[in-house]
Image (cartoon, rainbow, N blue to C red; front, side):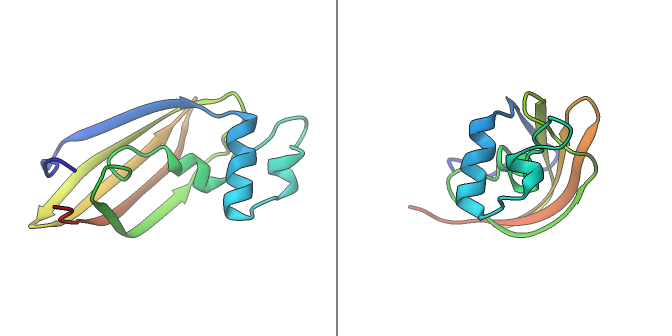
Length: 121
């Protein structure tokens, strides 16, 4: 990470969930639940961790997530476009507190977390 995020700053990213995303997540996590692989009523449900995986800030170089408290509020299906937003709530030296919200047609995930900025230099 090139610079520490500022308190109050928000970073967002948008993606569309695909069959390939769900299959890759299943291979990585071992979550091969029938509702993910075969679907329910003809619709495949994305894994919760897949819903979180596109989170900006958390994927930045040097950001080590130390805690998460998440609520999965609604399912995300193949073809759904979701937007993930992360807001830095507090910073104390190398430690951050943040809020993460994922929205599609409705809010699908909300949570808080903590992270530490690592010195990679």
